[in-house]
Image 1: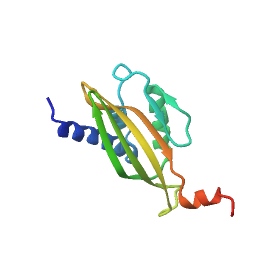
Image 2: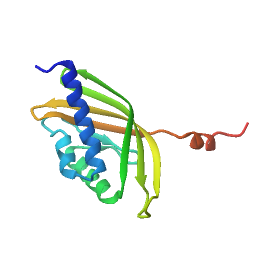
Image 3: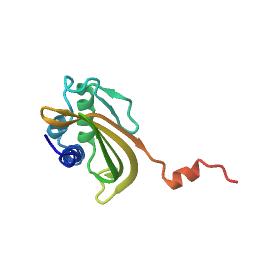
Image 4: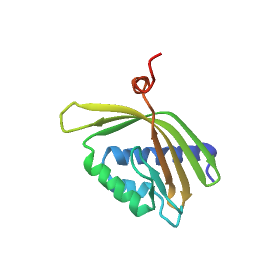
Length: 149
């Protein structure tokens, strides 16, 4: 039986593997990060600007497209919190994202996304059940939408 600390470390590692798969364009790692349908029914994934993705096949197809079309992406995770109850874990965090918008060297755009990742404890370890990411409006974007007083 693992201690609470060991469980938290395993969940944190599973979460780190998810982001590593994206950053490195590693679809095989992404496949190993997500649960199988029999381990966690109704897998769901919500990425900013995308429709809700349901089911392992649809989710893997979308990640393949993302990885094939993103030249560079890096995540700096902040405000990470892990909660565990039995065989379910929830990781919430802020994704501070740096990404190349085109093939121009050195051109990088940034943004912030708040995320909830749900994991389920399987015979293969902690695996992703649900990923939900929502963009955060930056101050200058908020000001643009605010009428002048």
